[in-house]
View 1 (tube, rainbow, N blue to C red):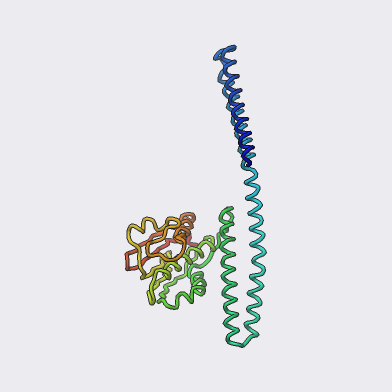
View 2: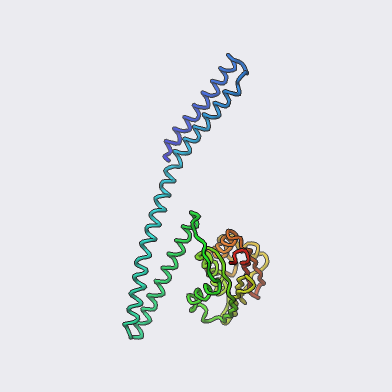
Length: 278
């Protein structure tokens, strides 16, 4: 809304208030205090109407612009999915045809990059659906999903010791949101653990536990660990939003989350999935 429009509405509102007060004064002088409540009701209705018209005129351009941006973003995301799928399909074909070892490695890098693009696409799509409250829930096995995600972390886990205790556990949740939760938990465990450190991923008793033997967190930091943009003193990477995303998702889906940590001993994060268990 332009500044001159704001000034015009302020002047109009001021004039309206002045006229209402003037009418009230004349009413009292000529009619008295009788039926003054009726005049007050009429005045209040007029003030509300003027305020409504002002708010509608001021906000409607912003709403229209946001709707336009939402449509453009959704259309762009839809179109982005097509070239990514094309890259993956052609890379797969080249991998079957080409026998050269160096070329095979290059094709593998292309496939990895296309998977990362697809991951980003799915993250943005999930965020949009979450904003408009249309993110659908689906049933899936937590242990099966974890095995799939571990393939993407294969290179990062090469210098760690990984322990898996994965029992079947079917839940009903927004799948992409849960993927982001697990990825953030595992990413933090890898990031804050040294070489040959033990990382345990446990799915049993209707819970998901991610445990590392890394640097750990002291008690003062534990109070702030879920705050957005907060980073521990020993953090050298990231923007401090990973655990904030985890906490936000768990709160929304009513998943209790417990974090235990000791400085120099490691960190354990437990998600209680009983309420979302199928």
